[in-house]
Amino acid sequence: MKQQQSVFSGIQPTGEIHLGNYLGAIKNWASLLGKYECIFCIVDYHAMTIEYDVKAMQNNIHNAVLDNIACGLDPEKCTIFVQSDVPEVTELTWVLSTVTPMGDLSRMTQFKEKSKQHEQNINVGLFSYPVLQTADIILYKASWVPVGEDQVQHVELAREIVRDFNRRYGDVFPEPQALLTQARRVMGLDGKTKMSKSLSNTIALNETYDSLKKKIMGAITDEDRKRRHDPGNPDICNIMRYHEFFPGDDDLEKIDRECRTAEIGCVDDKKMVIDRIWEFLEPVQQKRAELAATEGYVEGVLQEGALRARKIAQDTMAEVREACGLRKYPLR
Ligand code: TRP
Image 1 (tube, rainbow, N blue to C red):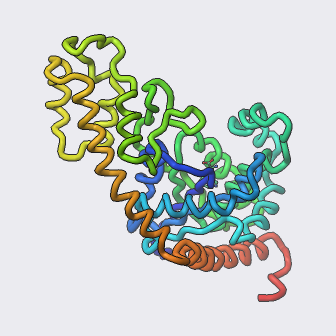
Image 2: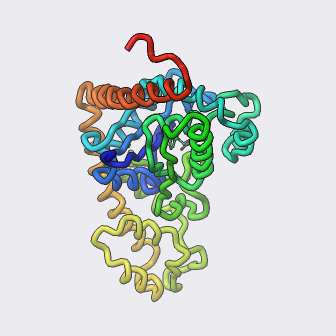
């Protein structure tokens, strides 16, 4: 019997992360540690499909590792590695591209959107991005892929590619399945749009207490509540959602009640939520600073992760080569 089922997810090395990233993804991943064999990959090959800052790449990877570990991805309990440290994934991508219909790829929503955003650079890599993503997942024979709504279509395609591969070459891969994050959408400070770096409405992981305070104090609450003594409506107040994400020891029912009866105003409410969010951020920032100050720490995690990942990847590729009638690796 195979030991534990595997979980795989990819992390874009796109710089500064925020509470939307944490609540929408990392928190969920951290809850899977110990229950599954978890593998997390910083997807630098994927990042190359749009124009990027070559000089910033290594720094972005370094920061992504620190942020994710500080938020709970304990490298003692999971594998964290960089995609390009296991180049076998590109070999599998090639093999899979020979069983992937072009029509399926051209129907991908993300491809259509990115083609619009990057009209000057619609490259073949952008088109076959989901094939590389499939290779990521199945190289490690992962059964579960914890992702947000926007990636479900890619995981569905991965299942189809696996079915086509297995039909043609024999039962090599399990069909992976998306594991949807439970968290509701995390709205930005404007209370209207999803928290997103490109919309400048985020609370960053590295926010100082003062900048956190300033941002929350300026955040939109219940817009129908015009004066301090008007009753509030927590159902439509984004700050109440932040309370729910970071309850701490607060009595949320009491806050809800006192808001509706105007015993507390938005400012009182915001002061409480600032403290709760800070109770989360402060230790995360401390941990991150400690890890960042430890010489060679990130490099050590990535080296070890790459060795572990590569071992699995080479075993899988040996199977794939045999199944497809290719030669054995000549130099192993
Ligand atoms: N495409 C994913 C995203 O944009 C990142 C990713 C790459 C991924 N490879 C993956 C996610 C494998 C899950 C599994 O967020």
